[in-house]
Structure formats: C-alpha cells, structure tokens
Image 1 (tube, rainbow, N blue to C red):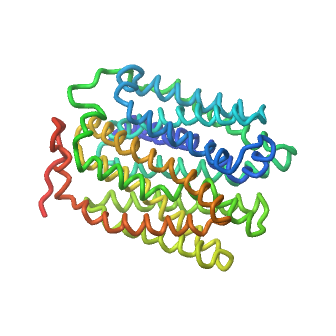
Image 2 (image 1 turned 180 degrees about the vertical axis):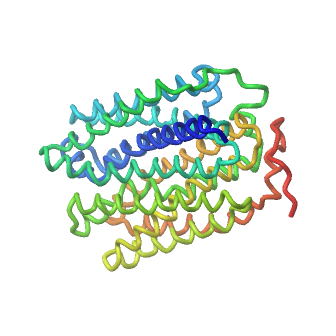
Length: 404
C-alpha cells in the first residue's frame, strides 16, 4: 500500500471518529440533567422519556427509508444534512425551557443522527475493504465515546454556568466542526440503487428479521441505561454530577469493547463466541444493579458498558457479513438498524412506565435480564454457514459460502 493510500485511509478513519462523536450527546447530555429539565419544562416521567425515545424512533424510521435517502441525497449530502440537523437541535436546546420545543429538538436531532447512521455502514463497506470489522469498531468506539463525554461534562457545565441549557448547547460545537470537515471530504454523490438493493428487499426474509430483532433486543439496554441510570442512582441519594460520572464511566468500557472485540472479530469469521461474552457481561451487570446497586456500582456499570459496546459493534458486523456487495450490505444494515432502533425506542418509555407503576427501577433491570437471556440463546443460530440464508426470497448476492 502506497503512502498516499495510507493517508487516504487515515483521513477517512479520522472522519469516522468525528462523525461518531456527534451521534450520542443528544441522548446522554439529557439524562444527568433530567430532573432539572423536568422541573423547568413541567414534563412528567413518561414525557421526559420522549427526549431519548423520539430520537431513537427517528433512527428507526429513517433507516427504513434509507434507500430513498441514498438515491436522492447520496452519502455526501445525506451526512451533511444530518450534521446540520444535529447542530440546529443543540442550538435550540440551549435557548429554551419549553417542553414542546425540547421534544421538537429531540425529533429533529433524531433525524440528523439517523441520516448519518444509515449511510455510514455502506460507506465503511466500500472504503475499508478487508478491514470492515476494524473500521466499524473505530466508528462504534467514537460513537460511544461521544456519549460518555456528554454524560461527564454536561452536568458540570450546567453547574458551572448555573443553568442546564449550557450543558446541552455546547454540543453544537463538535457538530459544527464535523460539518465543516465533512464538506472538505471527497464523498460520493447520489447514485440510483440497482434492482433489489433496498430495505424493502428484505421484508420477506426471515434471516433479515432475525438480525433486526437480535440487534434491537441485545442493544436495548443502552437506551434504558442512558435514560434512567442517573435517575436510579439519584433516587439512591447520589448527586447529578456523580450519577452522570457513572454513565461516563460506562462509556469508557463501551469504547474499550468497541475497539478490542471487533479487532478480535477481524481475525475470525465466527462471531457467536464474542457475542455470547458481550451478552453474559450485560447479564452480570444488570443483575448487580438489581440485587446490589450500592455494593459495587463501578463493577456493574463496567460490565454493562463492556457488553453494550461489544454488542453494538459485533451485531452490525454480523449484519454486514451476510452480503458481499457494499451497497446491498449497507441496505441490510439499514433494515437491521431500522427495526432494531424501533425496538430500542420502546425501552425508555416502558422503563418510565414501570417506574411510575412500581416507584423504582427494579422491574426495569429484571426486564433487561430476561431480554439478554433470550438473546444469548438466539446467538447460536448465527453460524457462518447460515449466512447464505439472507439471499432467500431476494435477488441480492450473499456473502461467499462458508464451509463447516
């Protein structure tokens, strides 16, 4: 590989990091400040949960429309529009206490994040041939790292400036930086999709649905923890900054997992062992939150973070494994993320409802234990030899056949 090719690859890797850093602050900056936001905006528990639920609903719905997005906007204008949406949403949040405007900003930011998320997997498959797992790991680590930074610094900035809006407004700056950098990149313009290269091509495919359900339920713990972990520990007597620090600490382990587990996956075709480890880590962590929340909170949060970081990256890699052609693989990833994020979106609202009904979060952690146990059993259906099943009822080329 020539020096120019290496520099080209490094430039795109850095761009993936910058993009990823902008995709979670809209969620994790909210949760440590949720009590203050609720008091100012007069939002109830379930309404406040919409601040994290609405963006995830948008992620799902836009992903299902990704074929039209790619065909009309292309990866260049699509990602630029996504960054602009995030920039505007963060700006609005910095200057309002109106609950309706805050919910509108959540909707707008969700559209922005969704546009980026549905286009990045296909871009990675195209640009990082032979290094897809590693590139997805870098992107996933940056995505989770951005969430951790927001959880750590938003409550501290809010405390320093004396109002919670400051902790939300600051995230317009990385969005602006990313937008300016992206406009300088040699991205690809809109191109029409070939026949069968759309999300709709997978609607009748059982393997595609299984991948989507697996992505949704194995990662639903992230939205639950982002929405309610700080509130859970505040209920146990912790301060807003300290509870936000727990969320930030969780993200450190997410990033470690998102970097190390895909690096291991790069060396092998088999994903089931690594996925099982990530789900078992979540089981142990949620079990700790349920039974011994004050005894070893750092350990429980570390286990959950490691499991979630590995699960997100590995389940996307698993989806990309199923198809060889980059745009078709990107559309499968969009299908998986579309329905998967719609499943994720139910988690914060359901947790808020359980909190109102029971007065605590124990039922929420128990629900997470059930989800992870079921997904652990499902994991063993994803043998490499079964990847060819994705081509059933579609005209898309499967990944190269695997023996054994």
